[in-house]
Image (tube, rainbow, N blue to C red):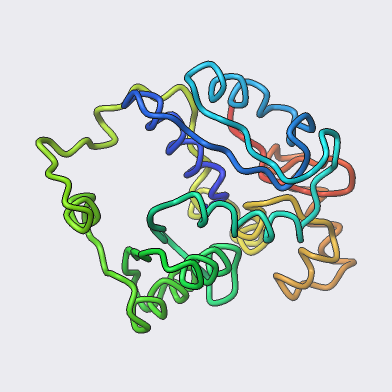
Length: 225
């Protein structure tokens, strides 16, 4: 998921453009839209025949542990799980563990050994996950013949991707890279190993620069306009 929110949004609109349906599994109640800017995406999923799924009461707010728990539902609803990038310890890795327990196929796009975000993906491949380099590799596993491979250029996307790390000031990159889901200051400090005092300063400056936003004491990457 750089949040993976950017990547996830591309997947959502890609599914819609291909006349498919999206099922969004939430780490909070179905009527608690977080962040609020996701209201349009929420409506789009419903309007195109998709579904919003949650095991929590309507107005239940999000918490980090809930995001990790909901991953078992994501893998459970899927016939297979594709890991694009995964740190050694990450929410993506948790999803892959659930998928393995559920007997699902796990597919991984390999990463350079210099890419810390791909360490988990490469380890999954070492443990038996299927290495993939194009969509056809997955389709053939399920006996599906692709007449034409759709590329990103085929899609008319109405959402801007998140900034790439090389577009972010170097001193902000470590913080920016972990905010693919809402985290509070203590959680960010644990992920980045940055002292709390220094971290508060970075977060304040990143908010001023429009890179992140804060909702109920939790920070998340701000989507581009």
